[in-house]
Length: 380
Image 1 (cartoon, helix red, strand yellow):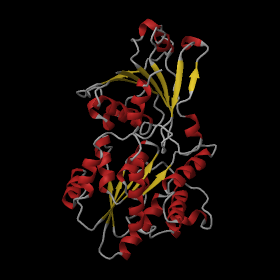
Image 2 (cartoon, one colour; image 1 turned 60 degrees about the vertical axis):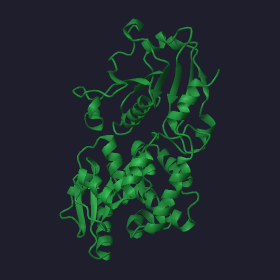
Image 3 (tube, one colour; image 1 turned 180 degrees about the vertical axis):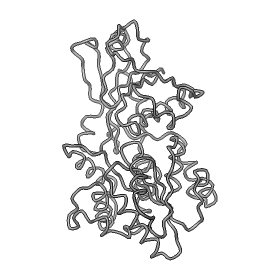
Image 4 (spheres, helix red, strand yellow; image 1 turned 90 degrees about the horizontal axis):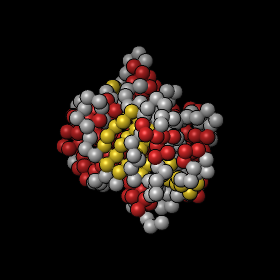
């Protein structure tokens, strides 16, 4: 099938990250994709092959979103079999006009990821259009999610093989880290940090340093992504004893996945890296995108309740308190000093075991692209 995916980049690590993974997965399954972007700059590091000077990615064409969405319909190409507007962006009027044909393309609004209860109620709902160039067309809402009554998560076929090869073999893990420039020795702890501005990075580093000292000669490599994580770490006068701070360059998506697989703990942010941390199955902390109206608190709590539903209550309470502190949210009984109060972190071994169990439960659900294909090929 031929797919047109429209993405207006608000947070180029998340919106574009999700759309590029979706495009890659569709192309790997034999489909062709036109990815329309208003800002493709991040592809230079996220997917170098797709950047203007790159060789291109088989099955995917990256196109500039024209400055005027109201360009005459003849200025736009014939839409494909499926048109996706990602994260509520509006399909250009010229494309809508060209969708007016005897057999219109499937029109899907791919929504943001959430574990809140409304997702199950809203997934798959029809939205007839009554006015404008799209009058008479039908749009459907498609919600990613964590249950069988949602659209699932992006998880390309064959993901588990290379991941398990790294996680189950010490030499393979060392080689994977070496490709990222990290001189790791077995027994050393590795933590990746990717966060928004405002995260208590320095407090985290101090606590990781104390944990390393308490463990004797064990060192902790802290792998810092570009942006807030690196800036906060470099603002410290000296690195805490026992830590090796390792600023990373921007990484292509496959390299970032490898990073998550090879770490003992991952701090992630937004939507794309959060889902990849789930598939890594390591203990992780999620920095949710902060919103001025505070609705992110409910979204974070809904996900924690879902992800940790089968965990021992004491572990779930400790990890949730840690997550809330990392996100600057009130933490019952601990205040905003919970990050200090909870380190050493909640039982590493148990946290790891429960993370793997939650991952396997999630992996039993059909992935997002499989469900999308079923959705657009279903009779009627």
